[in-house]
Image 1 (cartoon, rainbow, N blue to C red):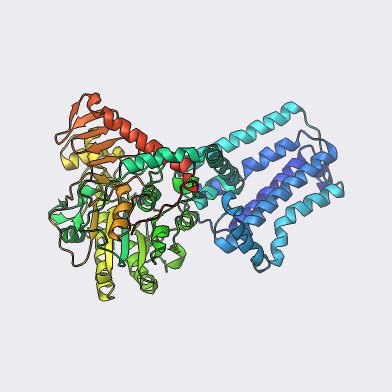
Image 2 (cartoon, rainbow, N blue to C red):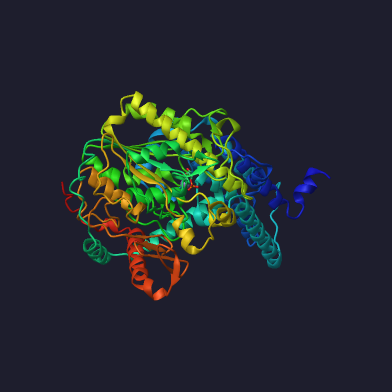
Length: 623
Ligand code: GP9
Ligand code: MN
């Protein structure tokens, strides 16, 4: 068929513009962004993810006629070029995709416009190639516009919507809960495409904005009253025990408390931690309180002593809030703060959230030398991670607050043969079987980290806080856990399994016998404990936790789903249990604490949803 007649065919206009815009998008993906794909399915999703948006927009153009239709199509192409070009420029500077709040932060725009000429390349004109081609074809009347029956246009739109649904379903199989939990911008763009990603980002941003707009200062007094009424004073003997010392916080990926002091096939799972615990304050009833934001939720708890949100990851949804987090508080005392985590910096939106929390520096994936030898599973292995981190640590201004986040012990818990230090356990569940090997590996990484700190002369000046971020073995593995532990899984037992290791190690400190380390506690308590160790009072600070060392400490912890544990009771999945045997009792016995937990979680959520730190008057932090 001759080109002319092809161009004159009905729908050709849509086909040509579709192909041009789609191809442009894919070429930009491949040439301007680093979007690694590992499987053919991921590649397929990447290739199809722009299609639904393009078709939807072209579908709208079908409702117009003649010149207006042609202009509309050119506008679609131009708009997509601008979106891609803007992201490419942003990416060259930040290695990240644009998010609406970041775009509107004047500082970022200032940074970018200053270096725009540096970042733009002459060949960037190619971003607009398709627009120019379409303009040319329309001007020269090579491409004819067509009127289409409304019914046909609607069918077309419906097909585009169906394709969008297919894309989302496929993304969901590739990365379950992608839209509810968000994870990472790179993963979002890979699965949804740049265009859909911006729509998603816009919706998320608008939702948070609306909640914030509805809040006014009047809610702060409820929060303040509650917090003041529940204040517990520091332990005088330990207040300031870490004053002016360096703080090293280590978040252990997916490490649950039951691995401590346990052996498999006669060998310890965590020999180093077991030894260290003997020289530390080891809190045996310490719970994780995370929700869907997993590691990022535990970081939120650590640095703010606020609860993460009931759904979604607060690191994504409320990264633009004002906070009064530990890095910021201790900066006033001369501390430098840094986070170390060898993963993509935009994972859990850390690059942005860390700035809101006041971190001075974030050492992320790009700061490490990562190659085939030292990376496996989720990325850089813990041993080289700590090894390389020490080099940076040595250069930090002192005193520092350094947070390390390990990664090797992440689901699916796979390790290379050479890193196996103990055998697998033998249940019918491969995930559970492997779990202990990866925990063992991280334990080894910790040992070497400590050895290196000692060799470098850093150890003596540091105080260490080590805790597990959240569970590693989910309830999907209950069968194997029953087999392994020889107990029946009930909500009571599952709740007990939400305990994670937690220790405070102060070199040269021998354990004081008057400290109760079996106190029921959780990640919400980390911040006040740390501040008090540094000699910083928390009397008037907005936080929901309590110093672990406080003599007046109440034995209670509330989990994110409203479950709770006290000295005598456990409440989970709507059932009330009496400790220590876990006998189910009448729910009424749990009622007062159920209400209290509900209230506390609601107040904390109010602070986050309403961005209430805007209204709290900074009261003097007591020395
Ligand atoms: C990713 C790491 C793991 O950077 O923190 O996240 P998780 O899946 O455990 O929340
Ligand atoms: Mn984690």
